[in-house]
Amino acid sequence: MVEGLAELLKAADRRTLAAVVTHLSGDPEAIRDLRDRPAIEATAAQVLPPFMLGMASPAAPDDELLQAAMDLAVGAPIPPEYRDYAREQTGIGPVPPLAPIRAPEDFRVLVIGAGASGIMVARTLDNRGLTNFRIAEANASPGGAWWKNTYPGCRVDTPSLLYSYSFDQDPGWPEHFSPQPALLQYLRGVVDDSGLTDRLDVDTRVTSLRWNETEAVWHVEAAHGDGSTSSSTANVVIAAPGLLSVPKLPDIPGRASFAGPAFHSAEWDHSVDLTGKRVAVIGTGASAQQIVPAIAPIAGEVVVHQRSPQWLMPHEKYGRKLTGLERDLYDRIPMYREWNRFAESWRFGDGTTPLVTVDPEWDDPRSISAANDRLRDELEKYIRREVGTRPDLLEKVMPSYPPFTKRMLIDNGWYQALLRDNVRLNTAAVIEMTPDGVRTTDGFDEVDVIVFATGFHADRFLSPMQVTGVGGVDVTAELDRDPQAYLGLALPDCPNFFLTPGPNAYLGHAGNGMFFAECHARYISECLRLMLESGSREIVVRPEAVRRYALETRSRLDSSVWNNPEVDSWFKGERKHIVTVAAGSVLDFWNSYRRVDVSAYDFAPRG
Image (cartoon, one colour):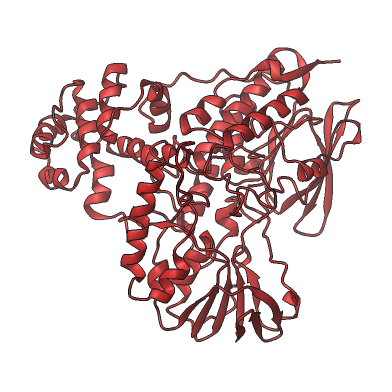
């Protein structure tokens, strides 16, 4: 008998446990009724002990067994097309290994950026045998957004066991939704464990790239933290600067005149003590929603300036430690972690896809479909429960647009923070800043500190790096003018160059940064393998492939919730149309990067 097993089974998620029992038993019919928890626990008590005691090891399930476990984990029939996705992303396998990349010894690759995408690209190249690369990271450490953003309350809004690489799902996450220090530690650990440290150059900011057509190499200029500069060349450049990496400051008259501390959320000044201070927070997006609840208990007063309200959904595990029996479930029951990850990938993935797809027959402007409308009703009820005692506040925080039009957020205490006596939500337009405060259309607030939680230039994919392509084309300017890239990765006039993520290379409603990074890294590495195996020295996307992808994507996005002309979001940036996110489901996205359509590229033979 396994000590404490009965207690573990009572604490287990019923659906996850049913999937585990089905998988480990090898019997697709092991669980007859998902509603019968006692029967599930009784079967688990019989099946689990040999695996928990090390007397048996889980085997990769066949398709029939996998399908049964998938359906149970989610509690609904899952299309069989998800089987290969489940094998890879849960880690239950088997997954065919990727073919090795055989490159000449002098073939050099430069990876720009050591965030989630850059780390994944480098690891994938290394695992496939292309080891002659350097990683240039502008910051003092790998980690990307999780190194840069250190504001109070900073954490991920995707479950930790899902917001992780498929090959390293749980380093011992401290919380269900991990805070920034744990996420930074995780990425640093992946760099170390993958043997990438000796090829990582921190405090190295690539300032310009210029393609040399005669030599078929990129000339690279970089600036270093000590003030020096350097020049080098690379046969291939893979840029992973991060989608949300260039802070966006509001164009407010007098902004520079404010005499007190003023900083962007991504450039938090930890030398400023907010205790007892009057703080203005400009913006109510994802960062602000985490900052305000974190600083409100210590600040003297917090004035939150809002242009438009956000939709927030509750999650019972947000902000909770992952300890005790919950931790034991992942550590002691084989495959529990993996099947929980699959269930979460559905809840935070294609389980939400119907919610963002417009029903052309739906005529209520407050929602886009019956499913979206049901969600709106649930969210409205939640908001009323949270702030219904304050009719004045309720009117300000209730969005008028359909859910998911902007990024869906998870409530981490936002509404409760707004109810505090020392917090005030101001929806009047900001018209100017003065040396001692903020003026709006309904008055003036004298403040000590201003925090700009105003987001990022999400539609500037290369800036401030200058990239010059074939024939002297200013690639940076062209991409700023009209953001287009094939599959969001390959740019015209840029041989041997990939951008991850580029335009329309993310999903706006599902998936997560780690998942997207894995998809992109696989695809980019496969492009390089095909180029080298064909005896070519160059691979460059055809302009018609770029245009076709852009047109098809925009056409598909026309029927999405984000295509609302009356609502601004970082999905559009400063554009009229959507430039950051891709169309379709998680499975569509995953499949898009599985194979390379060579007809989309031109290959130049070695000279």
